Length: 346
Image (cartoon, rainbow, N blue to C red; front, side):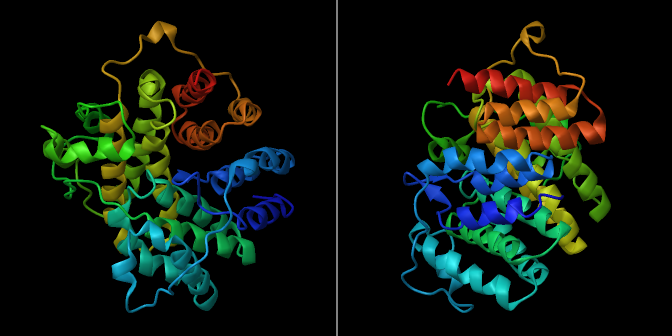
């Protein structure tokens, strides 16, 4: 990734702002700019950020430092967001970032629903950037991502390791919908505890026998969720993006993690994708004849996402291009076109 310092400049601007704004909405800026630079759109980053940053809040201040001895009591406490950001700012400067990640990944992973999965998504983007090269702004971004994840740490109800026989596509197709689909994500995820069929759906995925199979199943999960977006996005054009981008973020983090953590990473990513699917999937998919087809060029699809400007479209395009590169399936690109159409209507 060669952004001629653009990503570092963008991170430095964004690190003056908080991970959330308007009380709880996620700051997508760090994720979107990393994707834009990676796909060759560095020249558009600052102009995009000039518009996006107008809505952001200032960086929150800490009130009571978190230590290595008392972190458990602060986990999942959004009122400690400033404290968590300060804690991880120290961690990534005092230790190698891979050591920090390997230590905290298994602690944070059970809370993968944090910030509607944005904690892990932001972390995945930060890790991907650091795997290319290390410098101060990129290390600071990892600290910000981990701090946000820790403050919003939230478990998926009923999560257990899968024990079934289904592949990711079949397992996602069998996930039941929550009955009340009018309110926000916390209300929807709260219904999973009593949702008939939810425990069976979570356990239906085929377990991995080793780290390599966990990686492959995770890649298949990102593919299945991306392709499902195309006919199902009308359930929620914005929120269903995360059914694909959350497992993709986990997949991107694997090369920086010990192989002993890959299988639990798959299982957590599966729970997150299934939970978002249960919360926002429509009653029925859209008919195929009304869905868009993809242009011939993947690069044009990403350029269209940048021109559109919505942060969710950019993130889905980033994931869709990875899926298309791996599978050659044009529906991975058509899903991005579908997002531009539906989000235009919001």
